[in-house]
Amino acid sequence: MDDPEKPTTSTFESPVDSEKGTAATALVSTANADLDRRLNRKFDLHILPWIFGIWLFSFIDRSNIGNAALAGLPEDLGISRGTSFNIALLVFYVPYILVDVPSNLLLKRVRAGIYLPSLITLWGIVCACTGLVRNFASLIACRLLLGLFEGGILGGVIIYLAMFYRRHEMLYRSGLFYCAAPLSGAFGGLLASALGRVSAGGYRGWPWIFFVEGAATVVFGILCFIFMPDTPALAKFLTAEEREWALQRMQNDASGSTAVTVDDEKLDWRWVKMAVEAPQTYLCAAIWFFVLVPLYSFSLFLPSIVAGMGYTSQATIAQLFTAPPNMAGFFAVILAAHFSDKLKNRGCFVAVGCVVGICGYIMLLASDRDQVRYGGTFLIAIGVFQISPMLMGWVSNNLAPHYVRAVASGVVISIANCSAFIGTFIYLQRDAPKYVLGHSVSLGALVIALALTVVQTAYLHWENNKRDRGERDHRLAEENVHLLGHRHPSFRYTL
Picture: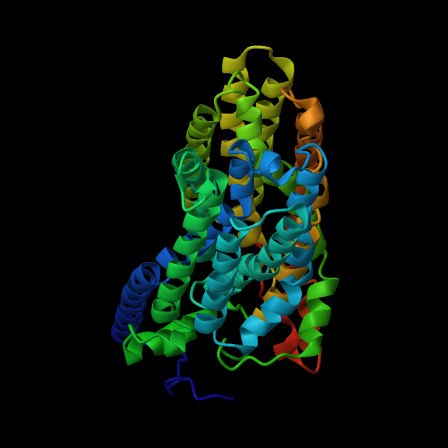
């Protein structure tokens, strides 16, 4: 029996020690928070401008064929905008889809600061050469090459950002670079309205759209070679302390999904298997598939849609009128991304975007007044453009570690981009000026996307509840706990 007079040893600190420990913890926490702010400021300054530019030129160079169509490309090449022109739009997406997964894996093996700028420079050269085409076959060849070099960009950018930012810092940054997509529509329309009237060197009108925009892309790609960092560990603009914390905070953010840093992670085929077996991979892919039907068709055919509102004989004015809806989409992406990260929620924003886009297509279909139909294009831009960065964030947030994310992102983007086979063929010249078929298919696609969003949100909520109740803790008994990835009981999905 213990001696009642003998003082027992307590496992608790004295009040004084406890206060000292609390103060020390608070100091460490404050120091880490200050490091976080410094890192994010530096990453935002040294990374986001280049990512923004990459996506801006990507969308300009893939969509400028729509502007060139109003500037006389189909007539000069002797092709029909009802059939052959749509084929020229479609072939871009064949290599674009096929290279997603291998490109993401290659990005992990090759320095990102070399690989991504190489793609940009190559597609800029192809874009400039498109202005030299003189027949349908050469146009198809240029579109195929453009799709080949642009194909790895979206997945590559998502993987690249995930090397630097934590899960719930990703969406805002994704939004900041993706808002370049609607901005490209506004900027491209304004630029095309001017370039379409240029006549020099034996070339008149549409070739100059490709010459100037392709040359600008090449120059930007060369600048990316010089200034884009590869990984946090190789970022020259960070101090030694900042580099160490950049790697450590990513390790902490993994929530047990991996035991190594992004620089040390190696390809394991179990990561590939985990990516292709995850239900959220296919749910995100399906949602994105149906969202991209209206997004791609809207980006490619907005000049034609607007031209059908009384500007069929005034191509320059039609080009200019594409700018305001795209600018509305630009601001919608930034605002939605900001509040999504603030609330740590993706599904609600995707659902609201679908509803807003649905309202826009209803306005286009139900009204005969050009003012109302033009107003519908604003709602489509506001609703649809902000969904893609949400889905990028949703994929990145709910799959781990990095190789799983790389494979799954490639799979999701590959499946989603198959929607181009629909989006490029639902707006035909024979349906002008109201394009009932295109608007109806886009409306239906958003309704399906909305339903799938509800399903994915319910699934993720159900899985998080199981982990909260300890019903996934048995996985900790597995031999390779460090290979659990996003299946780790401590990992929580973002709704």
